[in-house]
Image (cartoon, rainbow, N blue to C red; front, side):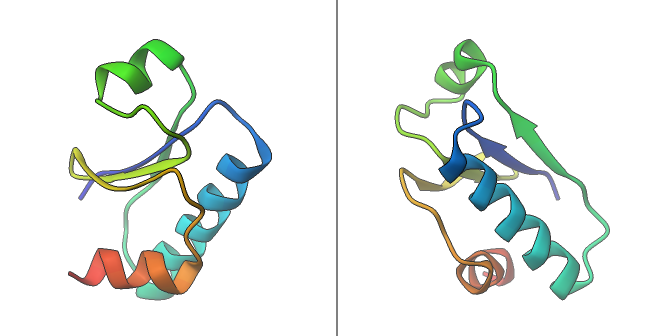
Length: 77
């Protein structure tokens, strides 16, 4: 599983990253949360609104800060 948080480093992006890391830890997943801050790479991945959460290359959320519980629900499905 590949988990990426896309954002330019704003406060909302940092909160989503922290919540995603909490969710990964709570679920006991042995994966790293990759932060993507390069604007060109974010656009190449098809994201126009940050922060965004990608799981295995698929956009699962964009433009909102998910709670750790919401991230856990996404990772379970």
